[in-house]
Length: 252
Length: 252
Image (cartoon, rainbow over all chains, first blue to last red; front, side, top):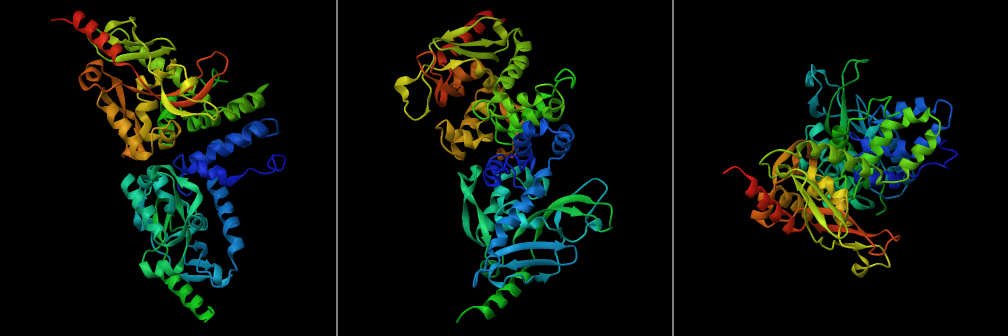
């Protein structure tokens, strides 16, 4: 169906999702519903169309994986820009946190991950939590997730980060460490300011402000899965290491 | 399909829509998408299911008519409550604006409608506008539309009512003329305050604050249809007349 439709444009869909209180990391209810809406009639005529629609409709977070792939597609073309201090990827495997920077190509700068701070499902606590983990932090590198918290005040409560005022504070803090505000992805609750876009390792190091990631919290034992949701900070050591590498490589 | 599903609960759907920046009068993109999501898989298996889904998916305002019927179902049971000053209906036919009040049963209190103030589609102006018109103001009687403006900052811009701050101001002003805040329909951008519920004619007259309605603007000539969107104020004369009738009928 996607091939027949020649794809579904994701940038306007995400723009709309931001105006519907998604931040595309811990809240994807709007984009999941909008994507399903685009697919519903075309899928209805297909074999297993009803089953596919039921699967999508059954998971408010369905769009997260789409958002992750989109974010990777947005940042990857910037992976080899000489001299650029813009982060092109953030990822965690549960034992290391790593970033890639445009000016240093495919090199990963890694450091031990932090423990997320957040709210736990009933019966679980911080003692059960694995350190920050997963590929989904790629959405923060394009200005979504924790960077777009002001668009999604409901998520601020869900990850234990406060109410509307705190949500705005998070977005404002992230604006301190980026190169620009997005021209198309805007936040109605901030009178249509763009989301903070393009993490600049120089600004991270200069301000001491670590990027914030809206994350699910995984149990430290395999097979149990998600036990909460919260925010994690990208460790400063990655950004210092990247900046040192950039300084060494930069033209005089 | 609706019969087979034994209906779709609308109160939680509207609660969710408010958290996704709908106010259910001039903005229904979230509730339309959520309703379609609930219907997609069940409809996919039916004859003409794809056509029905395409029809729903093609109109961001599809849910408005559902919201109107829901609002009428909410207020009608309160139509005969002796002594009550709560408005049970507001409606306009283009030449008269009328309200009904719980304590005065089926009586309509009418006055000439105001002209909406708003933004016009290209090629049209206030000179083309019909006075405020239509049944949709029933949604304001249950705390949606203009009363829930703070939930939908994008709509404030669409109806020419300003940005986020002005949207909050509208909801706060409407809170001055109601009996209560809704317990379940809350506004995340106001740290989950409920929408203003139950217009009290005594408060309208005492404060001089006329209810605000987020309305489409119709052309004054038949057959042309909508030429803009704006806000209209319910005329004070209706509320004065209702209050006088209530005072006359009230026990000493």
